[in-house]
Image (cartoon, rainbow, N blue to C red; front, side, top):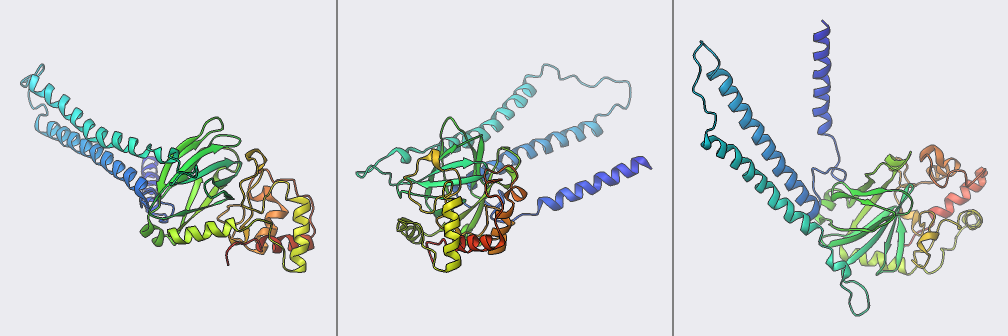
Length: 358
């Protein structure tokens, strides 16, 4: 009975694994590639899986044939094939051919995906024709700087579709890893060197996913590692250019329009401005960027990059009351002290008014 119980439990876990393997969303699935890099990696994965499964099937078939056809029936010794040059050549050449079939496209893809020469080619203005984004990973948030466009934002990466976007990856504190599952494989962000790579965001896949993908930290970095997410917003090139222009037009912090928001702005200037910027200019030294840029905070979908907290007044107040509750060990924990309900209302209204596009 114990043996039967164990097999039932194993069967249950096996069925559960098959069911869970079918769960997922297009904007989070590596099995639904949404760009050239993701498609290349997916094709390599399919190729390697096909080779491995093929080898397993062939070996299993041979094993079963030998098991049933050549099982011992009497005391006669079967014909010995030890030292057969023909067999030795066969089982040596076949693995070599399989390795070549896998190695050639893998090596080619590795060099193609590592080609970032466009990042170093400057035009007459001293800028690159290619779109470059400097990604800086922090505990537990992401900063995105567009050096050619001279703007900085955070938590939401905005990119054009159907063209290569090049990334410089670096970390401010500990090792992190930049990963957009549907668009391309992860790459580490280190504190002592800059890693470079590129991605392409397919417009058809973006339309299917509602123009949204999600990125994650893929390197265990601390208590809130699993909560270190960011949103990727994909736009056609003309809409992306408009977003850039709108961000560049913000030269001064937005002025609060209502008395309540003005009260919130005063609280922000007294308590928050030391860490958070509310203009997108990249003139602030990297070392001084202690917290996410909030220039367009009112347009974001989530509070603190948490996909479980929609960006609304109540969730903003919940976050301000106790950041530690929602993102353990984040740098904002303990910096706000006790804010009254009236002050929380005012600060939430001011933050929701930080927008660059209507």
